[in-house]
Length: 281
Length: 259
Image (cartoon, rainbow over all chains, first blue to last red; front, side, top):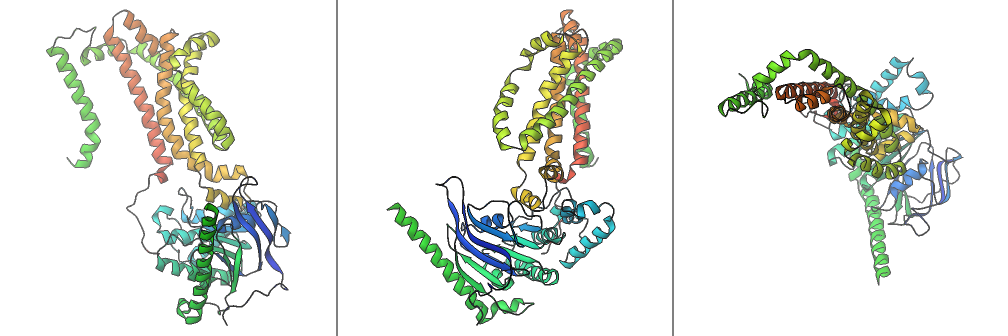
């Protein structure tokens, strides 16, 4: 069987959410997340899927400490999250490269901020430049170091954005629909790039996405969320061998998981519609 | 002549054409010199009085640049202050708009009361006119930083000062330089207004004096000099803008395809 119920409570968790709720504004504000429990082991690739507006992006802000939860606790690397974490790399749908910097210095931006690199950058410049060039080359951007972001295509910008998220070797990589704005073929190319990066660098990754094939191709564990207020309604483990190939995404067992998740989300959406209709009448 | 060179020559051709039409019209309709002097009379007046004109012009230039420099410092600091906090933005912005909508000519008498006549009120007026566009543009540049980018930096442990230095200020540069081009011309306006009302030196004073003596060609000569200075300083900041913030005016001719 391809999926199995989550039964890894014995192994130490790297990211642990325990009864996490998030309400925007005052007591009467919108409830974005409701009693979310999730556990992600070190080095694991997790994906969060769900209908739009289910609080996936809020979940990212909570885990990175950019937002405090209304209730519940969040632990990362064995410590409770109290403020913005410093061991995280992030990438978004919008590549957010700085237009006044070339690709290389865009990639190296985190080194100017994160210690101990920040203190070492000036004296060990050559060493860091070599590291950055190597990373850019590994995502297929060799020779584009000195190009300005607007000279790059959307897919290339997103590759550079991934490099920026990883240059300081974060323990945790948070991706918020990073490939949503790309065309289907470029997107699949970048799945492969991301999997390669993950296999060689062994970071823990949390990917928020609308794309169920993307989640199933990349992730070890997938959390399916309900419509607002977001709750985790199902957890799928994907036990396909690594490195996975794009061909695997057309195998019947892969399609079964995607289909199953599609139905779960479809039900969550129709439930939400019924609820809001009931509220009106 | 190629089209490109023609494009570069166009402003000069237009100016030359205007001067020719002006000269011709004055002579054709025999316009009296104290209504509208001919360009030749203006040039003659300039050559005759070039030393006092240049003295007055330099005085005006000095007031303008001093007021403008203070305007840059205060405008940038104020812009950073307003742009970095929504609360400050909400509190100060209406007040600033209110201050800016007061005609500055009406403030000069108050400035004279406080600062005396001559240079101090001229500098103060130049400053008052020039700081506003700078502050507003810097604040706008800072307020429009993408929230995702701020998240990226904050999740790296960046302090607000880091975010300002790495993202906020570089991002604000195009807005800042655009405002300088507006502010420098306004600074000239401010200095000349104040000199007209309360000064014994400067182009503003020269204009008022020559007007009271009906020396109209001299007035126009003063006007030409002030226009030339205004254009020159504008060009300096326009060149600086393209040199320093060329990234903001992207050219699409070197685009790499592919994923």
